[in-house]
Image 1 (cartoon, helix red, strand yellow):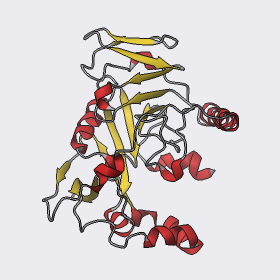
Image 2 (cartoon, rainbow, N blue to C red):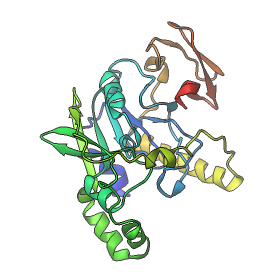
Image 3 (cartoon, one colour):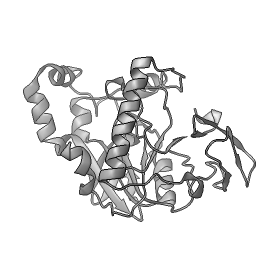
Image 4 (tube, rainbow, N blue to C red):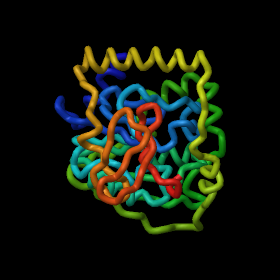
Amino acid sequence: MLQYLLGWRQFNIQATDTVLEVGSGAHPLIRSDILCDKFPFSSYERFMNLPVVMDRPFVVADAEHLPFRHKTIDFLYCTDLAEHLPQPHNFFQECMRVARKGVIITPSITAERMFGWGYHAVIYEVQNQTLLIHRKTRDNWGLFGGTFHDLWRRDKSFQKFFARHAGLFRMTYEWEGEIRYEYAPLQGELDQVWRRQSAAEQMVEQVPGRFETLKRAARTFASQVLRHRILGRPDVDLTTILACPVCHGGLDYKPNATLIVCQACGRTYEQRNNVPILVLDEWM
């Protein structure tokens, strides 16, 4: 519980910062003020296929087309997303456009070699304060098959070792003002297995059952108590920071409306259950 409440303090997040989490998934940071995910109704490629949490202001958006105005976010938090993007530079440019600083966390190159995940498109490491992007080849990831996945599932000692030495298996890149990145020279033949693995990810409408609905309601209540009463975080007003993901123009956004209209280019977007869905069909 202490780590859940205070873990965010390891990053350069100030008390007054508005924090956006991109690819928030099933375990958002308690300090994140706005959650953003492209696939809120699909748990494919998520740890243990857990459902997406939507317990605070939430926006459905594409990481490469973020629907926020320029520099309206103080800190952008992103974990376990960038490795899924075949052209992550598009995402990095968007991060720098909307936020002043942030952190990007992915599996380390060691973890990719030991475990290997077929649906990851690229691999990262940090060299000289630069994010180095490796395209996956047939011999730079998953060198041990399912050995370490099986070991993690059945061996509690290995699970403890994994948790104790998290820095060995995680790549953390904090930035302010600029994300320095470059693609590593390609060494070997490209492996396109991630294309086949990721093809199953899609936005699927799933109506949760009664038990799942109760669990989500309980978690939302607990999260709001922690955020509002302990951390003192108010809900962010999205009307002041949302923008068209295409032209970045202002939106005619009203919390309870069913349609959102861009005041600049006229594009329209849906809103369901008070959740703005700011993506285009071709991005899905």
